[in-house]
Length: 119
Image 1 (cartoon, rainbow, N blue to C red):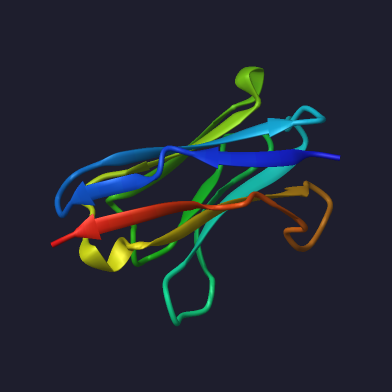
Image 2 (image 1 turned 120 degrees about the vertical axis):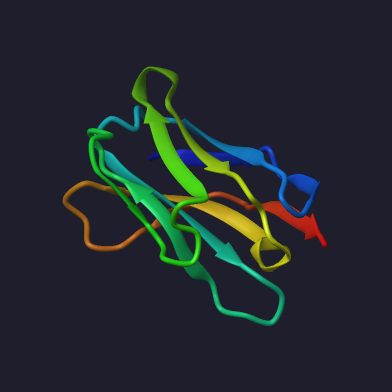
């Protein structure tokens, strides 16, 4: 089973950048589709980005398109979320998630990392 640990969150001013990391252990992530989700206070968890097991295809939510990018380094067993031009509305707990490439839903979750953007 894969275990996921996020890092890289923190406090940043609007317009700044952060890079989140999601380190996987227990198994190689080579055959896993991986994604980022976020949950702001009082709101439901929402999809942010995902990347296929091969790393060749990504999908980005419209709300962050052009500002966020996702990447994956299988050799490091790590996925990244580069966040640029951050806005106050990006403030949330960010979670990484994984699912085996044949699975239909994400079923492995990290504990989350807080991102706070001050305006």
